[in-house]
Image 1 (tube, rainbow, N blue to C red):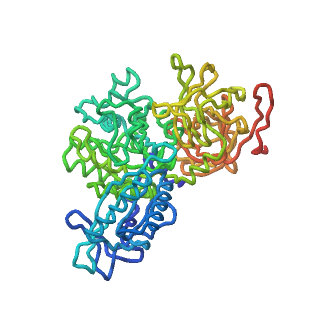
Image 2: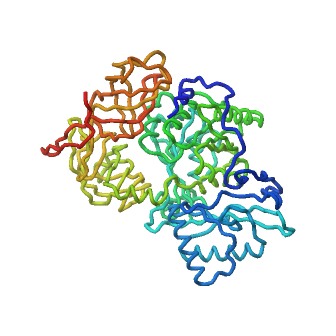
Image 3: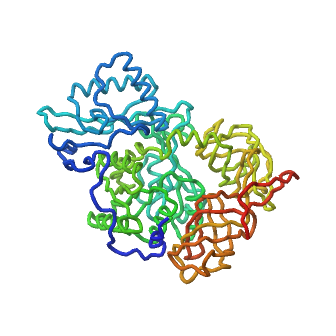
Length: 606
């Protein structure tokens, strides 16, 4: 990670800066090596004339995007081939695919006449029915080079519930300063009712009485927003239950509502590191702009390499000039060398579709939405964006994770009447089934204890099988809750988990008031692990200053933890902050039920 991220943490971002200039290139952009910029006409983008035809990037073999010039009256053999091709694209997109009709395989935007387009969409609909999917027209664009007849390109979303009946689930962490409108926005999205301007929409999201009284989130809560196969919103309106939302949805967005107040920063960091969000949504209030913890939350998302988009809320409270000033302020920070992002302001449905596709393909694109939770202004644009937003991992990566041994991170622990002990968290790898026997640990003395998974719930509805990357709660029956703590892992008994009290990490010191030396104590976050550690040694140096890199040896002061080499690490103490990754572990032996097991390689030499 570039040490320039330290500018965000240290509050020393330089104004101006040479950000990511240049025109936005990619889907719908000009061909590499030249090509006219697309012009707007009647709200639709038009290509250049015949001497400079517009291009998309060439079609990729992998991925969920398919180009088709035309699909007019195919033979039976050709139709079966097209259906097989659609199955492949849907598998690559984990249940979603995007078809560009009127585009050649090399990306040339040819376009079709209205009659040809109607016939092609009819064939596409038949193909989708064959595989049990629905199609939704995302947008149409006109190209008129070398032709007097208007010719169109149509972009179509094909979506189905995957074969294993596991809907596509994306996790979005919600960041932003206190009072920026995070919980209110989530309330409006998930409840389907606009806010009254005094926070009514957020009341259902709060978990504690003091949160309702103060209006400030202090804990991590989860809210769900579903989309069916036709792209329609499925939420709690019409008195739906969480189970009904899951049953009706082909795609689910799980929002992780995090705290904005600086007092609860450790809770926010824990939410970002342990719940493994796919994306982050940074909410900024239009009337206050970048204030409080906004810059720090932006730095956290960048440090942990979580792709983020920005929502400017409360635009109903401000004049147009104030909103524009906040947008410019954000664009200036995003373009600075520490961020090096390319802002993309979303003002129309067409912008929202482009933003969703560009955002997933390029880590530098940062969509910006301006909306109101009270008037509902531009709220639909955010829904269009979330509906089209593709997953970051493809089916092959998902399959590889599922082939590994079971590993479940324990993030939350509850006691439920008539159920017993329940743990919440994320399955990092493998598959977990009801009735499966696992071991949990490490305990304070480094042991792993046997337990049985009695039942599984995902998004508040029963689930028999949990797959890698999914979050869920697991009921453990009469297992003693006092033996559990956050930061533990539940793993397959065949796995030899590497636990350690001493480890080494390559770090970048993002901010420190003076010098960082041996003996300094920091709170270390590695995945779901959060514990105080002491600096035992800084290799090759006596001290570190802001922006410097080094390999540092840490020792946990309380109990051993389960770590992996290569895991991202974030540490803090007051204003001191740093990031890095684990490079080596001093593995220790553990006794499980009286049996001593060696935990494999990774020994450090001292």
